[in-house]
Image (cartoon, rainbow, N blue to C red; front, side, top):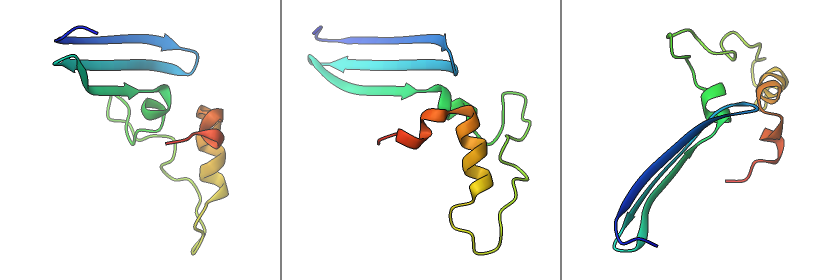
Length: 85
């Protein structure tokens, strides 16, 4: 592990853009950030400021886990069902 370093990498994955950013200070990881395709796909607006796919999705009064929203989200990122944080 280098004492001091910074790096980033971006690529187009099957589901969209994937980015990794890393900072090393004193031989230890100071910061590591990943922005996965899911993050880009579910952002409220795209790069042109257009609203995302969830705008206008039907949600019934009192519905805490809207099925329509789940279907939309999984259509962009089927792995959302098994995501761990």
